[in-house]
Image 1 (cartoon, rainbow, N blue to C red):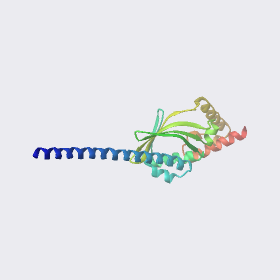
Image 2 (image 1 turned 90 degrees about the vertical axis):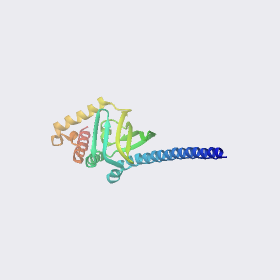
Image 3 (image 1 turned 30 degrees about the vertical axis):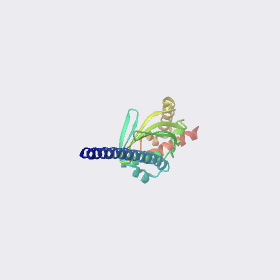
Length: 200
């Protein structure tokens, strides 16, 4: 009788452990699923408010610092530094569309199509990139441009260099616009494009 009781106790202890393990696995799956959906929503929201020029909303989506990686180039921005970059890019009125989105190991992989007045001048309409976003405590911490689907460096460089030389010759007060990554620098870049295109 004692042996039977012990068997029953061991059985229920084993069953309880299995139930606990199953519950832990299910809970982990639910958390992973929630994290995925949160990261998807976060990614979509980031590009939406970026396009709309809503920096205060973007700041809520970012970690204390944001690292942007593009090939060998890597820069970590503080929120203040990223605000300056955001102001620069906003001058060109970017239009952004996510055409593909998938999740792997809590990272988000996306294909992004970007149009802007600067890209139009550089003859890239649209510019298509494959990007990877990583997250830390529910906020975006890294954006990596993994590759470009349609980037023509020689065409890009030719258009940019032609503009720079023309400005240095005919509108020298705007010289240096291509190195000035402030809002004022972007406005001078746009003004340079407009002046150059008017002469064409």
